[in-house]
Image (cartoon, rainbow, N blue to C red; front, side):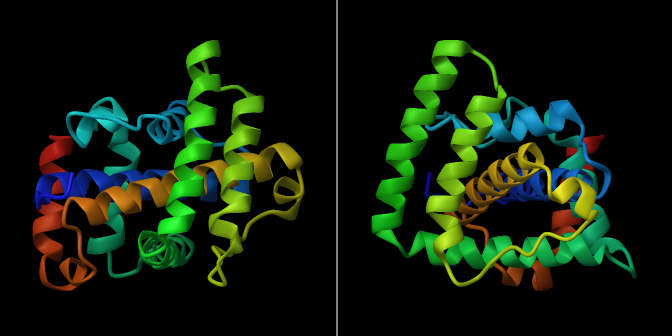
Length: 204
């Protein structure tokens, strides 16, 4: 998918926003909506798809992400943590998209995780750990980091750390998809209203 499609780019942006929203919820409250989490982790394992939307099953499973996207672009006071996460994810996506060797490593490791998923047909802790290790061995090696802040009580728990890393990996996947369908950083400046209107149309 290398063609430009504005609606697809908004879907992919909603994917990023849903992933980072789950990261924020886990870091601050110790848990996130289970369906939102599973949609994002499953999106990592869909390596072939006929459409952008089908990677997330349907835009109806991105309600959280679409709402976060609208809030980030339209409110006079945006969420500082989510804004920071979004900027970091897009920066990491740019680095990753220019790193062909890392892309090969990522593709191979995701294929292994996909085999596990197809065998057990569910997202369990073992699979989350595997996805977390992929993030740690690839994206985490770049100088730019997503600095996750929250409640240390939750951030120190190994299971939460793994889930956060797996979700950040899904955010990068959505960011790569956003780039592939023609998403550009300048759209945040020049097409902000169109992004908001498109997101609202998906929620209607």
